[in-house]
Image (cartoon, rainbow, N blue to C red):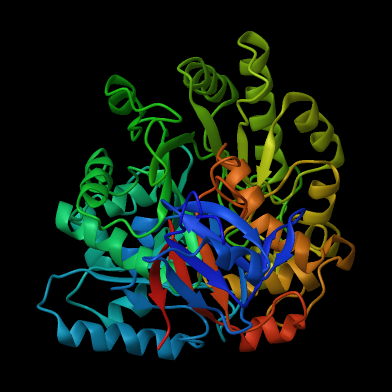
Length: 543
């Protein structure tokens, strides 16, 4: 007589190739109970945990992994920009096509309504330059227009937008910002902090729009096997109302992905004081919605020539990028935030910005030691070996986006040259040093589709096929670890998610192809996610 089972699984996935984690190997089946992994093993072993009400999912040989963790994106912005003009090079590769899309949008809207577009990259446009205010004026003379570069650190505005914001040639750009003029005339380009001056004229999204953006973007991410995200700079668009929107989305079951919220901490825009008064400090929340870190911007983007570098950009000896904050102000901010108990996850791309941030972190940690605070450097694209040594000693972690190599690698070469560009975002070096680097898309900067990200980790190739230091490529097992286990580590949640082992949440992605045996090109062009489970429940299936 077969002894009765003590616990019957709620669900069983069997007859598959399930990659449980870098050190956990591949199994045929796993059992789920109360949203968590109960057991893994062969199909014969795990089916013994079947009870009268157990749901069986036959994978029919399909390949599955832990749900992916996009460790740096902007969830609300991703949802909102799905309604904007898609100005990415893949969609609008020429300036004429871009202007025609703006012209068509203008024809569909009442005069005076904003036209918003995002995704252009001047290095990929046929003109090889940024669009001009005069060109936007011709396409939409009766509508304010904001055309944002892919990186989000540079935007082009037309004359109506400048007028609405009250900005003309006499307007002084704020510290850490640029309102470009040539021959005493506005070109339309506005960068970094100065963008806030123009964007203030755009109506803030209301609560319903914020919640809809969270839900829409989250559902899209589930279709790629992404079950966890970090939302970088919560509060950037609508202040503390974004916290409210997340809480209501969580209550109303409209939060599709596990969300780790990083609070905007920039001077003049910070929501940290309100959050701190409400007790919303790092670690507060549950497995679905957690207060994560605080973000401060230190510089811009390399492709936009605003990342703060120690040496000038090519062809412009007077430009080393933009320093957002003086050293003393940053150090005071970091120390105060650290002392309040927050983890920090600050934006620094150029080597000089990274230097400034490491110094601020070191001083805060020296004054108030915490060896497991895990302060992060978001992006950390152009770090140096000497900086890596200091990061190791202080317990500071890089949190990069490897897809930047795919999307922007050729742009980096064009603005910085080979020496600085090809070794940027050194994933293999970071992993070998024990940094446990995660990855992400920075969506809407890059598309959250994980397959270009995986492809670049495996090949270090850009979209054009340029190889950006092949020595920094990793194996598929290492790449999957970056997207799962290391993402959880970056959020101090490695004991909650990131592996398919007993006790961790049952977040699972099922793919159309075995990623362990597929070529990089097959992963990039021929693979899709066919099923996603979050907490043991099927939340996406592909028809």
